[in-house]
Amino acid sequence: MQPSDTLDTILPLRPRRPESLLQVLRDIQEIHNHIPAGIDLAVADALDVPLARVRGVIGFYSFLSSEPQGRYRLLFSDNITDRMLGNQDLLQTLCGKLWLEPGKLSEDGLVSVDTTSCTGMCDQGPAMLANGRAITRLSHHRINEIAELVRSQTPVADWPVEFFRVDDQIRQSGPLLDCGPMAGEALEAALDRSPDGVIEQLNLSGLRGRGGAGFPTGRKWAACKEASADTRYVVCNADEGEPGTFKDRVLLTRHADLLFEGMTVCGLTVGAKLGFLYLRGEYRYLLEPLQQLLDKRRQAGLLGVNIRGQAGADFDIVIHLGAGAYVCGEESALIESLEGKRGIPRNRPPFPVTHGYLQKPTVVNNVETFCAAALVTLHGGDWFKGHGTAQSTGSKLLSVSGDCARPGIYEYPFGITVRQVLTDCGAANTLAVQVGGPSGTCIGPHEFDRRLCFEDLATAGAFMIFDDTRDMFEVAHNFTDFFAHESCGFCTPCRVGTSMLKGIMAKVAAGHGTRHELDEVEQLDKVLQQSAHCGLGHTACNPTLDMLKRFRPAFERRLKSLNFQPDFDLDGALARARAMTGRDDAGAHLRTEEA
Ligand SMILES: Cc1cc2nc3c(=O)[nH]c(=O)nc-3n(C[C@H](O)[C@H](O)[C@H](O)COP(=O)(O)O)c2cc1C
Ligand code: SF4
Image 1 (cartoon, rainbow, N blue to C red):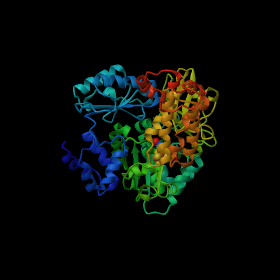
Image 2: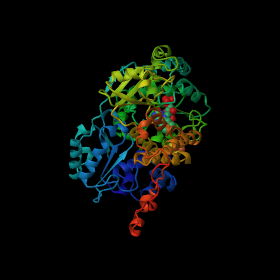
Image 3: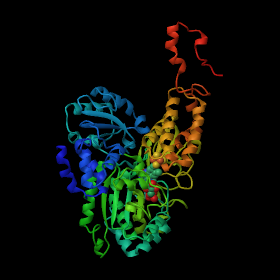
Image 4: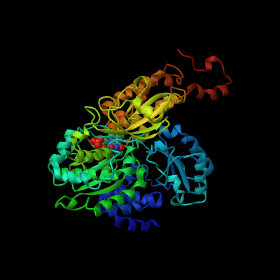
């Protein structure tokens, strides 16, 4: 399609409002594999937004590009679990076969190969995105096939379907995963109970948000309902960007009915007429099935106007796709992104419950939270709190990956021990578990009797396992690169701090580190804790500090010296002068031994 025809095709499918900007740019990127020159101006005119904003949005999201990326854009998922499964070697092999350098477009303009942050396929990696479509279980054999398909210029749509197989890998189920299709039962219960009755049951249930922070869901819905406004919104956070987390992917595949039921219950309870599902760009392959399901629910009277025949019970759901930015999982950044802007977190307060989407009261909940809320509405709060612990009621889905025989999804009552999970998934000789992803907590063997719950180890669901063959320095190194890459750059402490942290780890990895660098991490953490604008900056030093505390020898054995060493090798730089003057005595060298 010619760039000039693109907008004629795309624009009629979207509301002509500034909020459509990101979705329109995504559509253009999907057609041309980049945003062709000049089209940005036409988009700005059509959506009535400044050109600077269009360019700002293109520059912000990693899946958008104003430069041509080739007809094939191949992005290797670069989580630590992908690395443990050999993604680096596979990337080099593919680049070798296609005669190109990582990160660069091939000379014929056909293909580019690069890395991207975790794609949410850690239980079936190594993974990559081929023009945005997830490919799992990469092997040398599959890489050879991919190289052949690119060389023969076979469209990605015609690549073998087996490449794109994503399995649910549910290993252990509980009340949530065992629940059958939901075709209005929770909605019926919600209409019977009345909005206040639903909130009462949520409060009774003790349900807390599953996205990480654990805020009580009943209180959030009540605050939104009570906020004075003419319009309210419901937003489902399906951004799932925390490396090592993939449980929302499985819920969206298997239990989307339950999710939509939970969102609709929320809409009817707080008085919202419209909800958004913010689906991470990496899960683009789920878009069509989810849209089909929404249509089915509309036809069945479970969405739209007069839901289940009740006058005034109106609610509908629209899906928005993300475009590769981890920070958009933060709820206020997500709302900015829904409004078609760069995903920069807002100042809080005010919180989204009073000033959310378009400054209107908005409930933002995680996928799993909406599913649990639907079950609470159906079965009641007492039933729900029959599982779990006093402060952490109900069950929790874990995304288990790394060194174990059975990676996948496990549902447990809150309060389960780390040791039990390790036994169930067939982990042996475990050295460490990273609970809750890079922004969570790393624990060693003497802590495996700790419990997964808000009272002890809080987690949004990631559970990454490392056995005793792993180098925990490499794990920390991967996580610091992740934070530096994903920092949105809005505030100086995080923008500079995460890149300093990355520099420190690179220096230690290169064998030039000293104890001074390790001490610096603590100083950086203090600065970030006090002055970063959002949770990304606050948690960026967590993994390095955790691993330093528990696995210090893995860091110290890489140090050149325990004392300070400059980044710049002055003695090396003088080598030429020594050669020219013919001097190589001790006086012509810097002193390199330790003082
Ligand atoms: C950097 C960052 C990334 C986040 N990513 C996610 C995410 O991918 N999914 C999610 O549900 N919550 C994420 N959160 C938490 C959200 O800000 C918010 O607390 C959550 O969506 C609220 O839903 P809940 O109450 O159901 O947990 C993230 C927070 C931060 C600071
Ligand atoms: S802390 Fe980092 S991610 Fe958060 S707003 Fe600041 S720069 Fe952006």
